[in-house]
Image 1: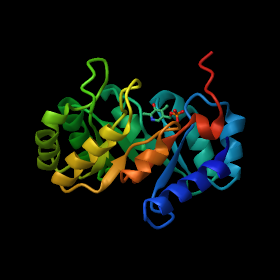
Image 2: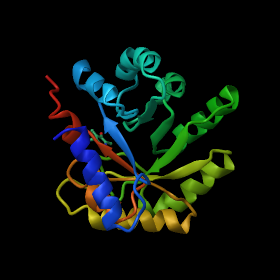
Image 3: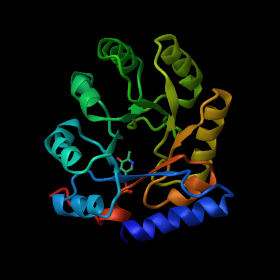
Length: 217
Ligand SMILES: *Cc1c(COP(=O)(O)O)cnc(C)c1O
């Protein structure tokens, strides 16, 4: 597939949705990809990346940030509170604010740090028991509690159930965002980023369609 092709598909989807080109942020999800594939995308000029694991990111991104100025790194995987401090050093955005204990620890760290990454609340739109995220019914209260902790929430994120069409989940997320006055929508992956853009995604997280299949070895 490759970066250029995905970029043009993103632009086409923006146009089809009546949105100006460049309004959707394409996050290239580079978790567990071989370094050579990531470097090729960096050399092609792309600067916005997503990672799932704090430790893995700590091992690769500081050097790439030096070599390629302007990198913007998004944390899109589950975040353990004992990795939070390191995560704040590494990431420009966190898409997985998914529970009150994390919000409380984050608020404390942000006060100590003085800076806060861009924050997305992960909503478990399918209410799947095995999946992280705030349940839709609890979202309004959780967003309000983040705000009362002085955390500025930029938007919402979801990962729809694998065995269902994504569009109803994207719509659901957009509705929760709208009623809470939030404009950011992190939704859509390799298989469904175009429908996410049609539903108003501001950030799409695309891995395998850019880099090729992941080999977890
Ligand atoms: C891995 C991952 C992606 C990218 O998945 P692809 O199907 O390879 O595009 C997007 N979002 C999250 C949360 C992920 O964990």
